[in-house]
Image 1 (spheres, one colour):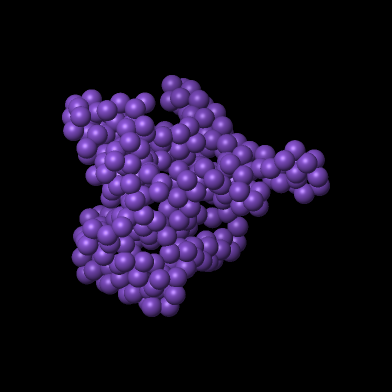
Image 2 (image 1 turned 90 degrees about the horizontal axis):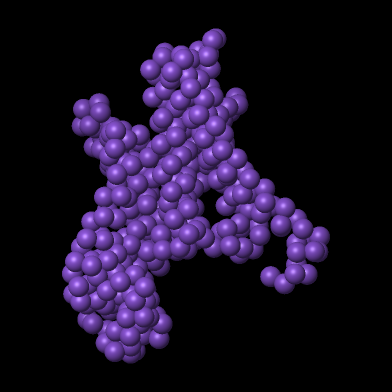
Length: 348
């Protein structure tokens, strides 16, 4: 806004809230980094005297709650600040519905792992999870709903694989499907989204006018991207030239589309701009932290990857510094937690 917004009383409040939101997110990250340095020292000399496993578990629960809670504070700061760059970054580069889906899983994860911070925290966490579950269906953003149910089904697969309880897993699957069906019946916004999706698909099947049609325009962007990929299948058309060439082909092949868009898929984006070599390099680098040292056993990290992967299928979200920051933060935090767990498990 204008500078007068920043010197008014309301502007000062919003500015302070912005600063507090950033601090509340990054301060625990700094704590984790400091703790990692201490852990490395203790790996050489042994654990601190009088530090029990119970004390460590309580510390871990508190730290995880601070990370999730402070991330929520950051998002709240963005909304209260009425469209400042914080929430714009979250909305554009990690869709808000996807983030709400991840927060829903975080509530479940903390309850499952018996997180304890105060007397009634389990009731609070369950309430937050249920609220977010309902909110996602009322919001009716396709990517968020897909991310939510994808995490549910992955969690069921993990449970079945770990405990070999096929009957209970199947019953849980039916409960999830039943819950989704009920929400679709009760939510008018979700019904409208289903109708809009069917109309979008109909436009695609009948090769209708893709202008102002979300799904159809996205598929056109994929078609253009593959045309650019064919220019050089190994190295692509070049990151710097992609947007210019993309717009040019859009205007040539689909002049009816008023606003050309870049490929709304991170993998297709790199395939067009950097070819097979660039795409394979990106896929290796992106998934390396998940598979290195069997980090996929970290369930929270696995769900972060499920969310990010699905976001990559609908947005080229790491094409800006803010998009990269969102991706890196969500991957690093669970890895830091796992490193601490390995350190303490070695001694207790």
